[in-house]
Length: 232
Image 1 (cartoon, helix red, strand yellow):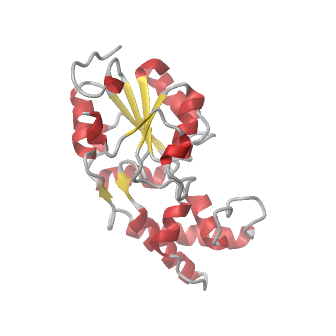
Image 2 (cartoon, one colour):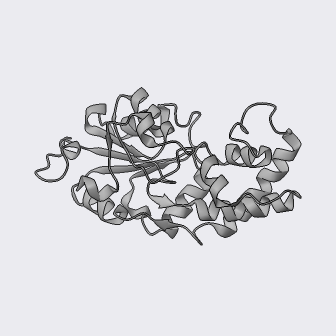
């Protein structure tokens, strides 16, 4: 199943599967999330948080994002940190607002379209693995005009585990019968790096995304590139 390449970065040699994070890797999605989150907070009689805080809270899925916003704290997804009834109401309000805001302010990062097209042209399987709810993942990919590039999408609620657990990555490799040494993970956060390490695949880190305010260098990916164009 190996795909031999004669050009591009060595990481693309003998590659059959590329797995991507979504938010902060392919799509700048914080503006949509922040708009929905601020509306939710105002509904709950709380002050708006804004994009800067939202950027720090993204990465562990929508439930954690909502809890962190309610607690105004990076530790907002810890048990007991947020009242359960408050969370349930806020969670439903957020999903309603996010459905309306989705795709209105988001955009693809530079180099994404060209890279996805290049991988598709070389016959490499492409999979999105995100902690975003499946309900919003597929819709956002369609709104961004890139859904046709992917052979599979795995959301944060698609399986019993999500990143940083390796299950989503292992599921993708098993689905296409592709071994770890022919697979690559590309992401922007420590969750992506940890999931890749646990799944035994190489991982490329992007420095422009959402890593809870920490430099991606601290997560020690195998390679850091300024944009996906750097691999072509």
